[in-house]
Amino acid sequence: MKNKKGFVYIVGAGPGDYGLITVKGLECIKESDVIIYDRLINEKFLSHAREGCELIYAGKYPTEHAIAQDSLNVLIAEKAESGNIVTRLKGGDPYIFGRGGEEAMLLSERGIGFEVVPGISAFSAVPAYAGIPVTHRGYTSTAAIITGHEDPRKDASDIDWKSLSGIGTLVFFMGVKNLPKICENLKANGMAGDTPAALIERGTTPLQRTVVSDLNNIAACAEEKKIGAPSIFIVGRTAELRDRLAWFETRPLYGRKIIVTRAREQASELTSRLERLGAMVYETPMIKIEPPDDAYASLDNALGRIGEFGMIVFTSVNGVTRFLTRAFESGFDIRRLAWLKIAAIGEKTAGALAARYLKADIVPAEFKAENLAEKIIETAGSRKLKILIARAQQARDTLIETLSAAGHDIALAHVYKSVPAASGAFDLKKLLTEGEIDMVTFASSSTVDNFVNAAGADFIAAVMRDKNIKTAAIGPITASTCRKYGMPVNIEAKKFTIEALAEEISAYYSGAARSDD
Image (cartoon, rainbow, N blue to C red; front, top):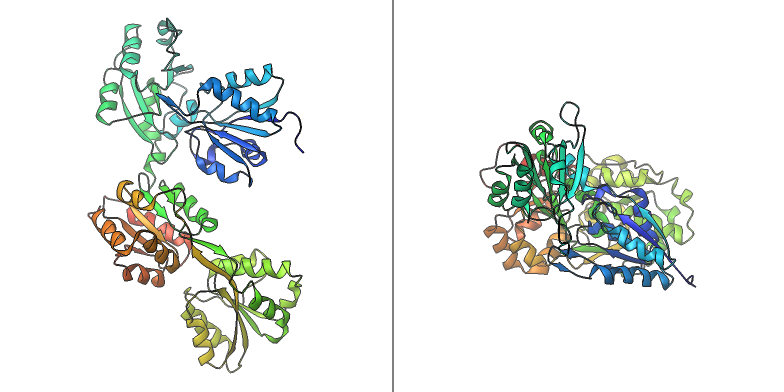
């Protein structure tokens, strides 16, 4: 039963980069019954919301609000008064041009408990990501934060332009629309026209763009480059340091837009690696992992007679996870595996075993079923083993056929199945035709099959060709499936791991501009 009055967390989610939210901010998200979020927050934060949490979009565009501010203040209060834990999730810091104070005032007036969780402000983070210190010894020891968009209902500006001309670094929020006027006001009040200036669009995100000029020319440069909102405008000598301190926009995958098609629960590793390299990643999961059709009957049967086997083989990380989870749930004592040899198809699968304190005895040098079978046969020598293979319901039978042909007795336990999944938050066809996508990644043949089925084979072949969209596959089997559908494979990872795939994508785009781009 909920309390008569709930509680509100007013949380600053940072300027856009997923890694720039605070630990406390994430804890608030996880605890909430209701999350009311702004347009510019990174929507990945919402994946941390607990099941059943109500998500309310309260986005604001320069000329349009999903919910008017006064109505929003009331909504927050009413949700709390209904006994909910409410997180009001705001971009940047709630108390730096975030109108968090207005929301807190109404809560205070109504006697509703609240807490403000500060966020990393664009005031410092966006310039840092553009290679521009707000202060720097020898350049400036003073800085000011100014709104470039004052309350339109005011008769006169509250900005003391004369005083601003003497401050070392000026950081303007929401200033794109009024950029020419801001520059003229500064020059009219004593600031030199050759004062360095920079405009940073979508700072701290993979879509960040920066232009550097001076007060005389920055407005024209912004118009030429079509810089839009949201942007931060910086005026001062420290803007000169960008040439030496830029780092965010120099990463190897900066500006690249890449689709990741792995199952949602597996996509995060590849996504985070590509994002750290500078890419804009769109997760469009093509498969999801579910229990097998036999409801684990084959696995339960094998666990009941585990003493008959001399070896157990795992062909994926999912296989390890699902096998051990089901074993635990059924009351199986993991110590009964002590006398079995354990084989893993690759180092990631072996790593998943090691994370559960199980050591793989056999790991092939090349992570394919053919190589794993060869290694098992070599290790067994003249002995004929009874082998349990824990794998997906639908998979190639190469391993079973090769080991059986060598005289081994094979039992199969289905531990999961892969099924087609919706493409997440994105319209796949629209993303491919309008999203200026550079590359699509595939980590299994099933993701290729489902990707093609989701949009149609003819459409996929045509759009990949016409839009010059590149393809990256984790190994030869997946690459072969891509080619089956008429998709040329630009990257075929030589080592069949996510790390290797990310490294090869980075290497592909590094160095001089490619002739086929």
